[in-house]
Image 1: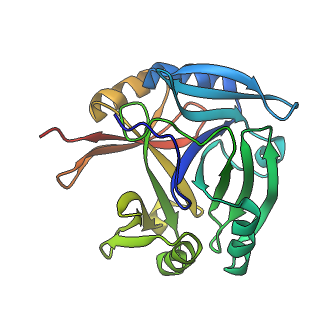
Image 2 (image 1 turned 45 degrees about the vertical axis):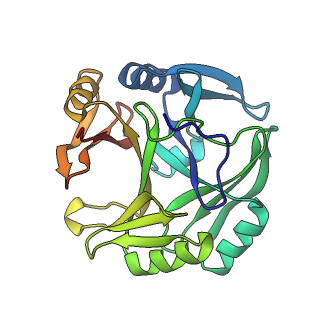
Length: 257
């Protein structure tokens, strides 16, 4: 079991869902992944739900800001990268061509957060930990395990993120892998025009015991299947889904040896 007590700067550390129906989303994900849910006040102006696998925080959930819905932004999962200094990292990102959507602000005593859009428009978050480091369980069943960027210009995105976070890259011409401190933690692929009007975006993967079973369960709970279970080399099986409110997410099942 991969239990986390800290994250080095540049490591993915957290993911949370912004949704139009928190109660329905809570019911969906707790049934799908076996999570429990704990509501807590958020900056004295709402509720943020901590999603847990056993005793471990694995993800979060909150109501989507009305201004997002009014701009046609669907419910979505956010991706967070741990940093030592949120303000300094935001300044560096801006110097590399990012847009600061929300400058550094405190989230109670949990930490400090920045919201950015990379030079191609994909939104991501910086997290300077306080009492909350991020997910305390990683890569195990019911926990996040991989983050993926879909973009219109992989080479430009690669230059941006490697300069900002010091990531290295692997993979091949069709798929880039993000490597942090020697660990393969995420990927990137180019948006295919055949997908339709898909903007650059980050997505979250969650580990499951069996991808086929997870997809069957998700469909019964009201999910839409964008990509049915598909083997990826010798490592495992993935599937892409949308929850009943429309937020896209992926599941991954490691192939047993």
